[in-house]
Length: 404
Image 1: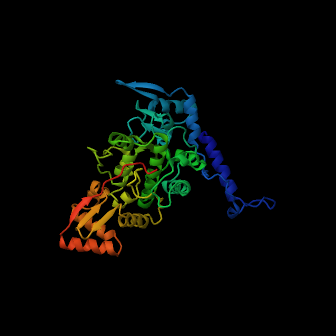
Image 2: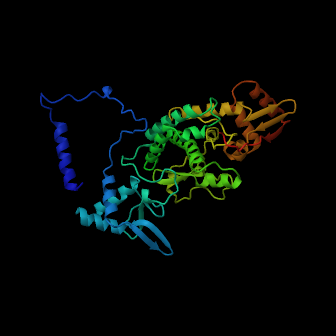
Image 3: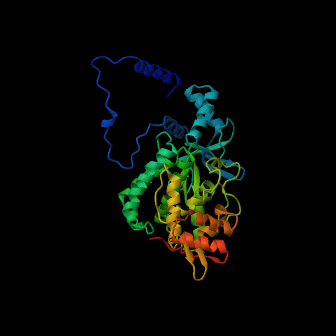
């Protein structure tokens, strides 16, 4: 839409808003009488005007392969070429064309080939997100809706995930019917919803929204990957699985490792990692929590039998929900066993692998467990052993078998 057309449209809109309707004008419908369209995966959205610009850009001939040094950037275009094209075809000033390029990035239609945040009137290269050769499981066609806030989209996805869980999880949440999920209409509806993740706005999400959003997405991504690429069966495959299984979220790719260690653990190194997930220049660092939240370890489900039960989490009251999940896990023998006769304490490997999130020493980890446990026999027994200091701590064998 040309700038002058937008001005005329805005003037017409203001005239309609500011004038009283004629006596014979139809009544405005009462929103309370609205009827849902019946499509459980449907999100009512406002069309994004930049989707039209993207289609024009595709037909412009600007998008092609560019060599930089010894590397080819496929299906790319330069910032200068884009601005020249906008100035020529739209008749707009160069500074306005520059703003339009930045909007393409801010709305997550386009991206810098080196993950920078700014659009520049230079020979820098950019690509459209749906032209990215990403192996993300939700890559491909982009939503033409305006980017959805993480809080809203996260809740819509949670509702769809919950339908899948209700139909294809065991009552205790520990076993998944992957075959049943793969052939269900609910799963196909969920896959369509994942397309909205690509352009989701998550930078302004609250702590509670980030926690519920990323935990739910992580658990759903594990199921998605187990169905589409198959479960890992050995150590090397598990390492590859957690580092290469990805979703495009808010214009950037996030692997399972990125979600767990980069976002939810406040950008800490995970198992087998030599560096932090996000560098200081990585735009995803802005999304990471300021500090790790230890309760997430009782909600993230990696697809193994020794993982906690699968649940969904809402932003409203998420910390209480996570604490409840931790209590349930630690009260069960899969999370904590106390043998008073042998003076033994056995904990899940989770508390060993991520000890730094629970305390600076094994004693502090045990104090954390004692604090979480509700009043009862197990808490009393743990308190007795901790007070005497006469106990042996060990860790339970972790069963990596698929939770199917």
